[in-house]
Length: 400
Figure 1 (cartoon, rainbow, N blue to C red):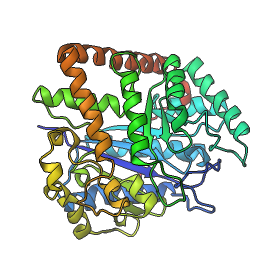
Figure 2 (figure 1 turned 90 degrees about the horizontal axis):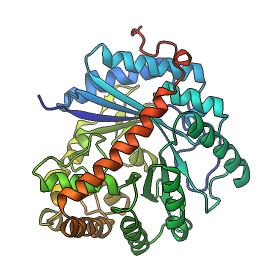
Figure 3 (figure 1 turned 30 degrees about the vertical axis):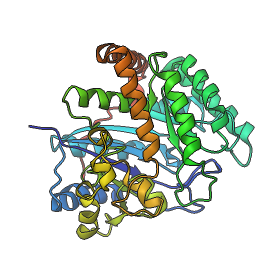
Figure 4 (figure 1 turned 135 degrees about the horizontal axis):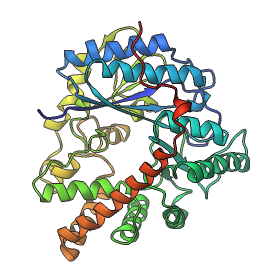
């Protein structure tokens, strides 16, 4: 039987301990989702809402996001993580959970979060723009972050990190990628999106230039994961081999994302994804109120059958799947519109095809396998260092 993957972005709080310039997931006085509300919401989503639209996943990824998860009481977070795991275990549904954190905490706290999630932890980096601040101080933020990051690198493993591509970071992308490559850190380049806050967006041409240059500096030259290049390259290789190109994460670039993801906000609001939640686009109901808008969901789900003609005729459609629906909507082009980043992704796929043609599909796949295996080896080594006594029986029996 084919595995049915589903991703739930679980935002327990929008409270944050920092005040970064371009954050769109922070609130002054936010509601904090309680354990009882988590139970109520999870049960509604997976026992009521999803079955109504024919979704019965056999593999679920839970991504804990913020705000900042470190502001949530640690003992309560541990209980929630254990309960969520046991909920799916009792239903014979495979689960993988992870967390995104800014690492503004002590090294000891960072290690406990790492241990709780068995190393499935990500962070973000910004060594050049001074846009990440703690009480207005970039230096204070950088000192605490570096201390926690180096503590994990010494005693666990170097966390993967998001690097936002924006007006201020673009001039230093190459240097920062080179520095992180030397550390062995996996990096995700993420073009800035307007998620409800006022930001200075780079032009499409600026993003295109920096992303293309970054790909050329990465391809067959380093042994670290750099996204979106890694999944784009593997997806293209899969298509050329006649395999399915999708990733289990459900994101990005899936025309069937309505069937593959939801985002749950602290007040119970349901959105298609975390970016949609930040921008208040594609609201689908409220899990605490037990409401789910099937009509709105069906409109979103129709995207895969109503892509623009340019997308349907594109040679990369099997890999790109029409791009991100949120990108199109946030640009005012509608749920069925073409992503404004189309030329960026098309250019990268062109570079991928050119590289495969020049160096052969077999050589490129062998190099990519080495990159992936090396990254997994680092993760496995970090997990082997986990203090098993600190996690205290993380798989608990579900209670009411």
